[in-house]
Image (spheres, rainbow, N blue to C red):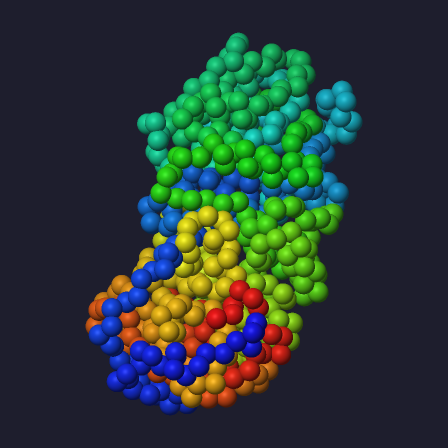
Length: 594
């Protein structure tokens, strides 16, 4: 029977007695029945944060910070969607030679920015021809300061390509102290990742600071989120200093997973006190990343994440990627093979390049999500790509993100053309500080048997998903036919009308469940609004969490629900069910057959 399987009218209307009739183009009639809800059939609603960046990406977040947020916000699953090329540190900065304030490497920029703290009477940052390190011809940087304070010189690479996880990273810096002492030290400061509170340490971003010339022997001390390592640096002689970031973080904060930190920021400084004067010459800064070639970066990430096994028992977490050198794609499931990267790592927004990447990812298993689809499109051009290029081959698309109305408009264009692609929500959080405060804070729910990766991917592929505003609505949505979940399904039927049970639990006070019913007329990219009808069920009428709707497929229809808050904002939306007379021209995907 395959995609041509049909439902007979008797089975569809078995529980429909006494309901108002509703059809496409007719205001929806809704009525509750006295039937008890059917059993869960082994499935349960599972909430997921599907777009997160941690210490293998460019943001300030750690894995621990996101896991803590998931626990605080009762989110069952997190997917680690670090950028693929950042996991591999592909074309990330390798060396800075201090030849000037702007220093490209393979065409990618490095820039320095000066600032001061305290009360300096004099300061300077000069690129000098001499002295310089013996094996690094060219210029070096002389930093000088006098008074009481710090001269800072902060470095940044193009597109944050100096940042990255510290698990395999050591830094090397050549230093010549010219005027040094306990009151005039060279600082090398590394901004690390944000972590939850622990072991007498408040929540916040860790800062690792090396003080060269501050002591005759190496010393470590931690003060809350700030860790300091004093290192000897004899005056008048060049010395190559090696900074083992991982080992020093382990010693300073032994309660942490040390590898769960990113080299988020780097700056050099001369700090003086009590009116002293300090002068240091620095040269040849090297970022030594030992384990990033090929697939090694992903193996390293897996090792870091294994250190959290059992640490947050309420939260399941799975590795994934944000594939970044095309229109961004989240890849869930599959064998985690890193795709090839261009050099330099410039993003290619060509639609064909994205389609080819989706084919590559599908060849390695799992499902693919088209991320922030309006970043280079307007809603009309997005609708054209959804219809004419079938969502670039993606299985999922981020619809639950701002502006939600525009995303849903384009999604309805695809729905009226019977193009099934699963709508999901997005957090896209890089900070891990407060998910509820984010601009995009939509979690995705699926009906699944477990939080196992395969069960979740199966549910996503079938469209058994809905998204909600993390802070405003956390209820369950579903669409059922004949006692079975039909959300995401493409149903072919000869029935004149049938009953769809609308499930919507825990609506907040004043919210309304809206039933969006549209004609499937395959009208291309035409405005879908005239072909849509919207019915409403006030929250007070949903005390049992469900209502029955008798719907007429007509020549073809789709139906989805959405929850609108008291203020008129959409705070949740389901995936549709399609009710068709014939299968669509491209057939019905196996996962969506009812």
